[in-house]
Image (cartoon, rainbow, N blue to C red; front, side, top):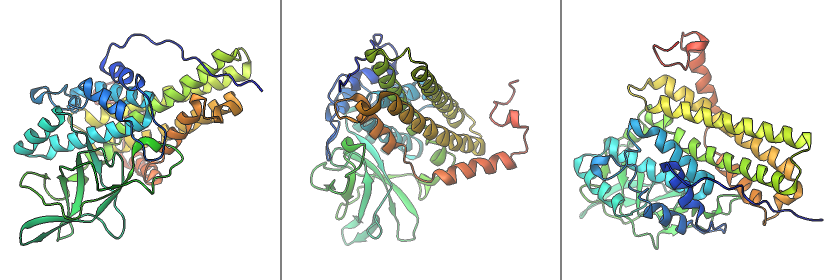
Length: 382
């Protein structure tokens, strides 16, 4: 049996920020080992100024986290996801952390952590925790001290400025950015996943770390404030959209390399996969707009992002299945680009609470009191 490996179709020289991000990630090796991390990809993004890019221009960034930067942020996230989903997952966490600091942090915290981002520190958001053993803020004679751990922490051992949620003695949740030595606290032994092996996802023990005066971000329970908590999911959808495009690209490249694109069944599958990828892109584009356009209509933004979650998941699963059907056995061999792309995307598509997201969107459709054609339309448009 002859195995044909595709030769990627040439791409244009990068122009926009999204293309710069995609080129930065695609130009370096992509590890795929348990316990590994896309060190070169993150270094390439750092060198391109993309770790500081979420900051406002006044703080040395490109304004990606401001409402006017949503389209460029979407392109950056999609571009990185197209090149390396593990790097995309880590970068999306970096953006999320900085967005929370910028929204809820005081002047001192904003200045301090913006300087850290400009200096190249990698941020992340770690909010999942083992039970028992979750993160809490305690106190002793020397002041506030952390006890407990975070689990499923992507970038563990590499993120130096994690934004975490910690329980206060009264049970409320406090955001913190904890300056962290990347060595010694991360345990990656339990992350033996089907895909996203290079995301360095694991458990980090914070016990014994003392809190300084400027590490608290916002008021208790700000982390869960809506619509930003739920509607912010559009960002990981943008990364997933890039992964879908990568699967479609590998699908198309294989048909071109093998000369099998003339078969009508192959063309039909490729057309269906292209439809799925475009549907995902359109949902993400609209979700980004509704989640960031000011003033935000909270209920509508959350409902639409929840719809987009289901649509992007379905598009991703369809794209994977169609590509694997077209490529055949070769697509399951480690030497073929599709093998890793499909594993990573299938794993990353597994986000929490998909059923609740879908039924929450349905509640909005039932209760909005608007004509169906007006549910997602901007006011004043026809």
